[in-house]
Length: 148
Ligand code: ZN
Image (cartoon, rainbow, N blue to C red):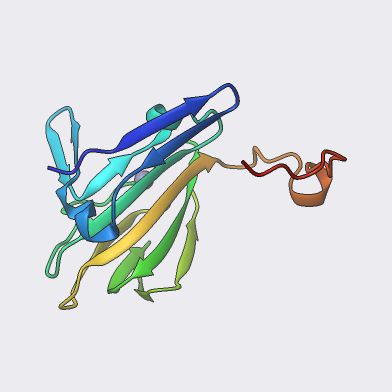
């Protein structure tokens, strides 16, 4: 059974989820619902602005229901394999390198109709919540690099 490990410091949390080939072993248990091949990482890393899951769906796998969200948009980053993502009736072919953003109220469902594992990451964040980013939010510091 794959078990993630963590390391925390004053201002960080590091998580090891193992190689992607082990990700199918994770399972999310929700009330009345078991989702194989999924691991939520928000609580482990103490994320405060988004939820992220790592996912691995076997060949022939499919999410058995449509879902939408109340306030969160989602970004699906496909990092290995091929599959299909359906959004409000539009079927999108997705593969390694595909990135799809979905509005909260869109009806979505996806499947792996290929013969290899589909590996992807889902980032869930409140729509219209981002106020500053990249150069507007980042600060370049004068601290000299000091590698151990
Ligand atoms: Zn969702």
